[in-house]
Image (cartoon, rainbow, N blue to C red; front, side):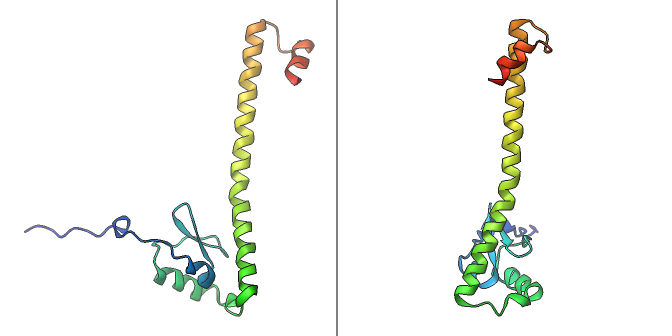
Length: 126
């Protein structure tokens, strides 16, 4: 007898509902459902999991309504984006540093001069 196929979460085509942002303080980032308050993700992107997380951990945010709630959500989204951009900025700085070090090494090799030569350093700083 053939075994029944196992369910896979990826095959269920679950999608983020935009209303979860205003109701439960959740936002979709890179295909995952992220809590704006704790920056945690839920295991499966479905309303039951999102609602349970909100009801068990965020009772203090229930009194926020209307414009006040929307303002709080915008503030939290900006904070989350800032946190995520922090690592991207650091990565870009490291990439630029690596590129510059390769260019200096190429210049040293091309000119055949020691690194301690002052004129070479001045040329690199331009």
